[in-house]
Length: 152
Image 1 (tube, rainbow, N blue to C red):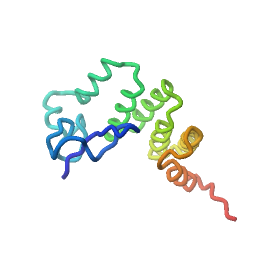
Image 2: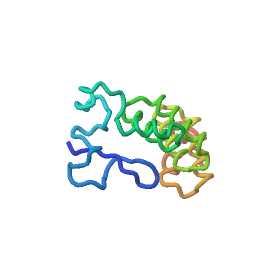
Image 3: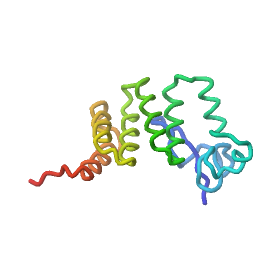
């Protein structure tokens, strides 16, 4: 499997293309997981609960909405949806005008089958920025799941 990396694209951290060379990024690992996931042998051997860079960031800026977003991202990929949702809600409380945060929270709510909450969060993302990428797509998916399609 290819290495997975966290890349800050300006809209938050996303998996995929990294700015580091092929396989030499310190935040990548073989196996497709994120640093700190249970399949990271170095971290398991050290008994760490989270990646060192996330722990250090949280120590340096404990009230940072950016750190909370990164922690949420990590929890999502660990499969801890409830924890990821709670972290994104805390991030939004600190930075309530960031449309991409509502988009991410709406997506997490969708994945967790919390459709009314997802609908509300995605609508808020679009209120803040009608051009926010993927918000219309995810909102459409939520509407389908809610069964709120009207025939014309």
